[in-house]
Length: 334
Image (cartoon, rainbow, N blue to C red):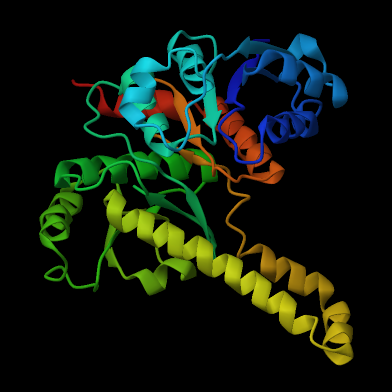
């Protein structure tokens, strides 16, 4: 049986490369069908593999002598730092040695590297970042959340089609509901981009477009896929993450106020835990950069172990369902 190969850039994490290796340690026995390539400082990575007793026959190290930092110019870094952990990881996907790449590094550099090194698939105008966000119904896909500011209407239509394929194959939602982020539900509302895009989405016969969605309806699961250009999408995502974090802390603080509230927390512990989990934004995997010739997934710079393990599982599902192949086939020039 051919194994899935996931390459992980270990030098991009704010928490250090050890976190990335710890994540592998948690899943390597669970997923016998998946092996790993890790890029970073070889001596350091070897010591972590030994520390966590990881089978070295299933993890290959590629030594990186350079690092792309948050202060680097994205395009210049990709072009000049050929021996950086990120560039080395992306080249493994480009050369067919890995099925997917995960990185917590410089977002702009990863987006540039995805486009220049892995390359956009034929027929794809723009490659969007598409994270899953928690809703009352489970999850919705936010596309684009940061890759293409000022995208054109034709690109947003492609985002909708890619998002539909993703939700159907990865999340298992048949005929997912597609909506465009707007300031109202009427077609005449919105900026020029939204107004130009809505008629094009209505003409698409291969997606289930339901119209516009206001931001307040997103957490309730009003649509399975929320389409927007990156400026709007990134604001929605960052507000979502900040609000989720604040709510979790505030709820916990309330139950720690006094003895009565602590007793109440114990009494409803199971139900409370189940409810609070709905607000978590770090267990949905990373944000895949869709429409490339290979899978590239961006995780937060401060990603904890559970976000890395979720991203690994996301990659496995993506590979298993051949989502990349389906997207490429859908957009190949006829």
